[in-house]
Image (tube, rainbow, N blue to C red; front, side, top):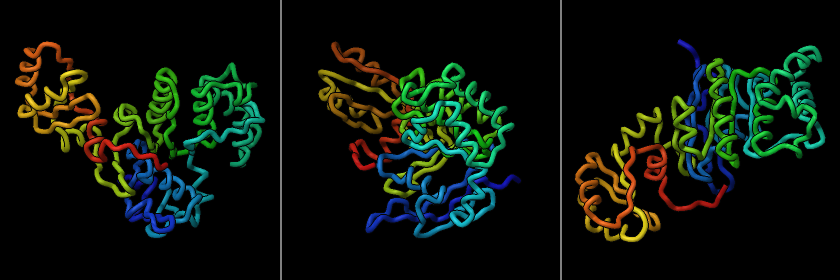
Length: 306
C-alpha cells in the first residue's frame, strides 16, 4: 500500500497565549487533492508555513517523503511546489526570467530550463507574455505564473494557499482546469480555499478547521450527507421573517441571515407547496452544499483575523 507523501501528527503551534494550530493530524496520499477549509484564523496558512520550515512547531511531528520536518526541509523542498496566498513574484524580472531564476534555486541546468520554461509558460497560458513583467499582468495571469513557477522543479506535492483568491470567474475556472490537469498527471495537492465550489470540484477529501482544530474530515459529498439535511429552501426579501414563523415547522432547521431565511429539510414538497400558495414570497429550492456545511460547522459570524 502506498505511503503518504505528507504526514502531520498532533501538530500544535502557538503565538504567545493563542493556539493557532491545535493537535492537528492529516495525511496526503499520492495523486490526492486534500482540501483544507475554515474561517479566517482557523490555522490553514500557519500549517503550511510550519510544513515549509518557515515557523517552528511547538508540538507534533511532520514528515514529507519520509523526511522529518523541519530538520530536513531543504531536501524535502526539492519535491514540493508552493503557491503562497500573496504574490511573491519578482517585479524586476520578466515572466520567463521569474521561472528561470526560481529554477536556478533548485540547481536546474540551463539546458533543463531551456526545455522546461516554454512548457510552463504554455501551461500557464502565458506564451505571449514571456517578456512581460508581473506589473503588466492581470491578477489571473500572476496567479497562473505563480503556479507555473511552483512547477519548475517538477514537484510531486503542491502546497497551494488560496490560489484563486481575488480572481474573476473566468480566471478562476482556468486555474481549476490547470489544477485538474496536474491531478490527472498524478501530482498531490494540499489546497486551502474559501471557495466551496472549488473545494467540491477539486478535492478528494476535505478537512474542516476551526480555531486550529480539525472538526470534520471526509469526502465533500460524504460530509454533506453526514452533517446536513438533503434540501435547502431560501426565502428572501420582504415577508421572509413572516414566512419563517408560519412555515418553520416544515423544516428540521431554520436559520436567518439578514433578510434571507434558510429552511433545511429532508422532504421539501410540503414547504414548497405552502410557499407557492403564499403570494409575493420569493424563494429558491436547491440541494445542500459545502457552503451550508461550512456555515453550520463554523457559524455565520464574520471573523476579521487573518
